[in-house]
Amino acid sequence: MTETPSQLLVRGLFRVWSHVYDRPVFQWTLYSRVHRRLLEKAERLAPARILDVGCGTGELLVAAARRWPGAALFGVDLSPAMLAKARGKDFGRAVELSQGSVYDLPFDASAFDLVFNTISSHFYLDGARAFSGMARVLEKGGTLLQASLTTGPLAYLPGQGGRSISLPGAVYRGPAEQRRLLRDAGLDVVESRFILPGIWLYHGVKR
Image (tube, one colour):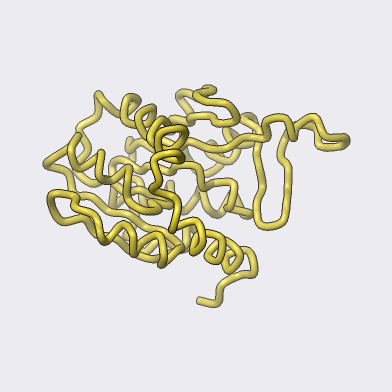
């Protein structure tokens, strides 16, 4: 499939970002904190098949492997460079890592009962298509846990109205817009809340 200019831009960005993504300053101050919030939200679940969409270097999957030793684990990411870092990690067991786009996830419908998506949805310019793709691979009653950058102070720019902010290669959505897209994709949004500056957690269940 031919990649869009936006996808090529994201791939290039993460080729550079892959060299520093796992450094403690970024993990301790942001990513590991977000991962902990998602895992806390999922602590009552007993998933059999888990997918991390936009898995990056695999840090959330490392934690998921410890949390759910009996679950089958899968990760998908657009960036070969990020996946190369993930493949070099010790998960303690087999984890299937695939290169792919959120717009064309390489999995069967209803393949998973838990899907994670962490701080990558702002790169999904076509949010309706992306969220529908994640909902497609969830079984009925399955859970999507998503942490997303919101509009933050950008919402106060003249003419923006707080719904979404579009920039080259990215779109930052306000909570109401994010919830709407999730609902339209076939998910009941049972919770959405602020967890860290500029970041909201969304808990969706497949209808």
